[in-house]
Length: 112
Image (cartoon, rainbow, N blue to C red; front, side, top):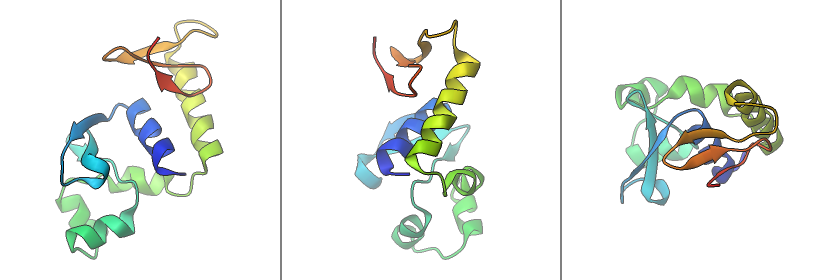
């Protein structure tokens, strides 16, 4: 999946955006103290580490990365729609996430 879809999935799964000028594209996403990984090889390179255990030691969510790393954008959309179905207050209605953001039936996230 591409970066934008990865961000959508992270947000839908409850990760919070944290601005950081040192992070890729100036922001990282964290939930329960673990940081979402978009691209593990680039991350390892930028941190100067070689193993997933070292990433775990730096509080990166390696398990979620490996769960979703082979997802296409279409597969991510299906996951988002599944999350929506679990959260939806009613068929065809957007589900409130937080900070004025809603998850819509098509899997997109935005404001009303």
